[in-house]
Amino acid sequence: MIHDPTIHDNARSHIAAQARALLESFGWEVLDPPYSPDLAPSDFHLFRHLKHHLGGNHYNDDEDVETAVTSWLSEQAAGFYEEGIQNLVVRYDKCLNKLGSFVEK
Image (cartoon, rainbow, N blue to C red; front, side, top):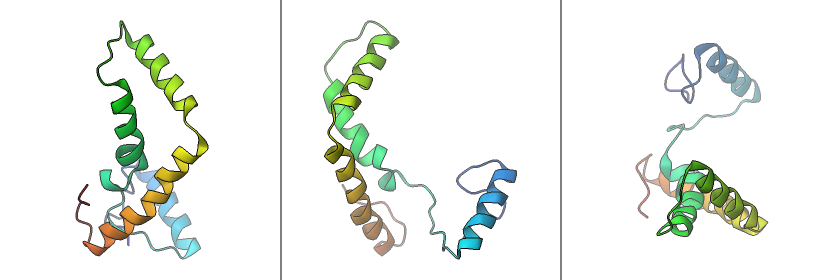
């Protein structure tokens, strides 16, 4: 169920209509909420580790930060990213069992 017939994931309305039609053609059920920080691997997995890596360091400018982030991202093994996706399954189940409430860390 899409809770707003004109907007899906804050997409522009003509894109949302196309996305809605495509999802309906697959017969897929769209679960609410379409976005939750509890269900975004970048929020609960990636950024948590990146924040720890960058914490306590000082950078001269945005370019230094970008270099540090890019370097860290490229150094992570494939298993690191796979772990984030696998944890998504568990977190999504917890969120659904709490009827969309936030998942406790």
